[in-house]
Length: 250
Image (tube, rainbow, N blue to C red; front, side, top):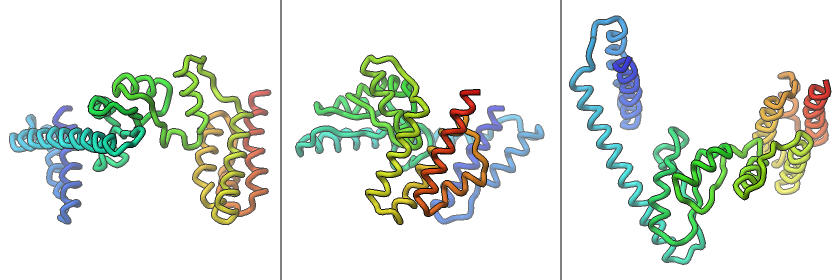
């Protein structure tokens, strides 16, 4: 099983490096080796593969150390130029949205400056927030993508961290927040642009409502997300949350 997992990961790594260099992916060769492992032709990981794994680990370690040093240096420069506080994301630029944020790495930045440091990256719950603060030693946290479709999450976490009892947001509160957000987007961008900008948020709100028990056919989902009439969208949103109320009443 160990050889199987390793060769599969190695194939993907080879493909990514080859594509980045404009070459033909070489991962297929390792994939053939993976198939041989699968049928019992190979019982050990080849030595050249082990050496390559070691080189990759050394490279990853060196890259991580370089990133940590750069973060700390940038933080010190920012402090020297008079900024009030800084936010540090736990992932590197090369990671983009892959992998997990390294909250412990933020602690190195916190130790290098005296100004407030805000930790960011992969915070999607109260438990995440507590762990992030513990591992990063940061003065606060920032919630990003997890707030899409549930902006009330930020308030829930903030109140709980302040010592209040954690409370789920009521359906009526969610509905009011969605309607207010939609109206604000139209007011800010204008109807034509605001409608298009709101669609990703409506899709996220719809997913949250379905998770709360809303019954919503695919045809009506399409109408909600593609309509250019704000009145239709508002009406569809009202119907969406009514399906939750009816289910809870039953």
